[in-house]
Amino acid sequence: MKQYSISLIKYTITLACAFSLCIKQSLAEDASALNQQKIAELQEKSASGDAEAQYQLAKYYFSGKGVEKDEKRAFELTKSAAEMGHPEAMTNLGYFFHEGITVDKDDTTAMEWYRKAAAAGSAKAKLNIGLLIRKGQGAEKNNQESLKWMQEAADAGLVEAQSILGQIYFLGDTLQSNDYAKAIPLLLAAEKSGDPVVLNMLGVAFRQGYGGLHSDLEKAESYFRAAAQKNDKKAQANLAKILGIESPNSPRRKEALKWLLVAEKQGEPTASMLYNNLKETFPAVMLLEAEKDASRFALMQSVKQNKSKKSGVEK
Figure 1 (cartoon, rainbow, N blue to C red):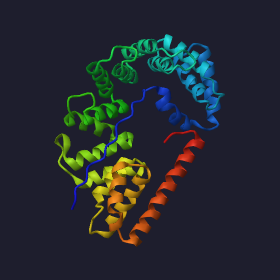
Figure 2 (figure 1 turned 180 degrees about the vertical axis):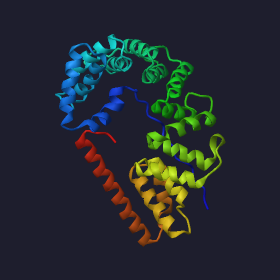
Figure 3 (figure 1 turned 90 degrees about the horizontal axis):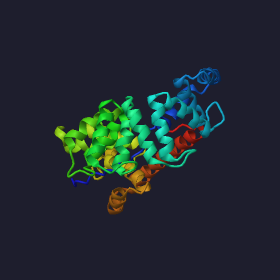
Figure 4 (figure 1 turned 90 degrees about the vertical axis):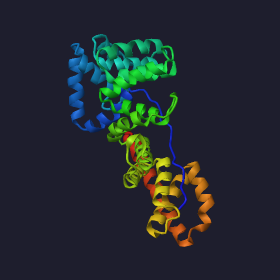
């Protein structure tokens, strides 16, 4: 049977602000009549100078959930809580300055607040420091210093730090070579995030036996399948390959063709190449059924995305 190359996708770096990471999810859990009571309590405590209440209330104003969206008010509350030493408020204040939300974009000031937050114990701030130093924003670019800060955040249990750092080591990005021995424990720790990029990389690791792992095709398939169901096109292509695009097992070959088509329709290059090279070898009935299955999957993903947009919650 032919061997096909593994598909990987480069990670996307995002700042680990409590707003961008947590607010939509946490507020979705509160979306009820109790919201108004909670907001009223937070407003009362906030007025009396309670830093935690100001930090929490700022998130409501930032998102517009339960109150009219007001980023300026969110900034004011965040700044007040930060000046009282609230670690995550300091992290969020850095985010305001980095993104230029209601204030002029200022990476130097953002870095100052991130450093204060990190000194107060914020793992998210440590990750943000690492990410900014990595890009030379607000500080001189220094890859080793960047990795040190991200490692501290990962050691503190911040899943996003574990995910990003694991991907850096896995891909060898800005390093002399891939470091699978460091990457695999980080990716395994980040598995609980459900990030499809992480799941796909773990599938690759188990298939290839990277980082001291024993090659395990069953585990690899499981990881590829989990990521593919989350609509990761690289994982969909990898799942098609491991199922067996040319397998003598008809059900597996049919499923492989389905995932190949799903990935191909998303523009995944290896899937497009394989499909174009092999489409004439598939029985017409199998191809028709796989196309229907692929279309159903694409429709389900579209429905999920529309529901997420309407609810205002990112999945």
